[in-house]
Image (tube, rainbow, N blue to C red; front, side):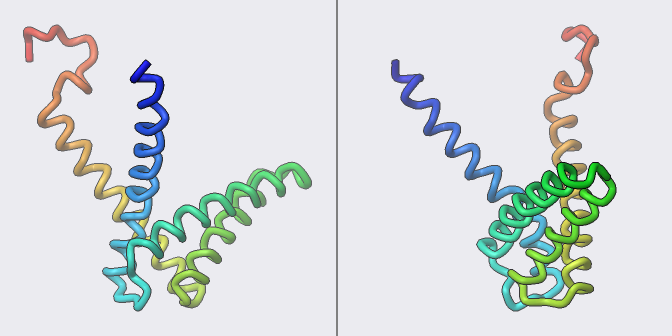
Length: 133
């Protein structure tokens, strides 16, 4: 019974942690580019609102015009627009901020993957008998 009560609390905690973690690359990029509004709250808000808006715009465009490339392009532009508005920068700076955040995210994923592979080799070596490790 205790697990049933605890599960929604854990789920909510994991959702909040994942939202904050998804904003970290944008926060780091804003710090790296020296923006005035470079707080973690701005980064999380831009990531959350931008992702939701891009998804909504993409779905609406695909329903109205069944052209996936158009939907992805307009979704991306809406995400960049949210970054532009939250950080109060121009289009070029917003695209640069997005690009630096993507590069940062890739580097963080590679570092995390290396750490997991180093400390938990059985996690990526499927089919290898455990006594070989």
